[in-house]
Image (cartoon, rainbow, N blue to C red):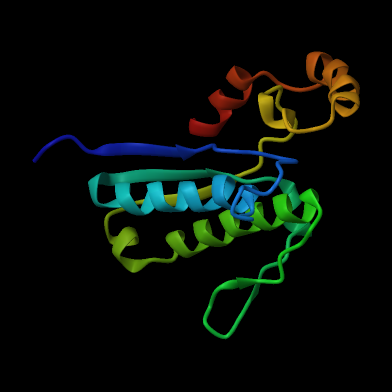
Length: 155
């Protein structure tokens, strides 16, 4: 065979984003559905003992997922934080479902959700400028760098 994938780290993220032009929840689309689709497409080439790491957030504890009778996500919140929390809860639930799949267990593939805590990234780019002004000093002094966080994610 060809080459196989050993580790997949899904680390897409937006916070505070406005809905898309068609009304789509950008938090759910970017934070969950994109990584979900990428993972589903790459699982066939994941090698024996591979790992899927989905970057979630402790915000998932505040998330809620409601479904209609057809199984579609229902009850869309209007404020950005419940949207963000819901998208991260979807990450955690997807990861748990991957970890329980017998066909992945047979191949030794494991799946993990991780919460990075505060990391100095562009995650806050959609926040109003006054909020960014408040966050910047924290980002420089308290938050970890992406490199510091990344070492712990894959190790």
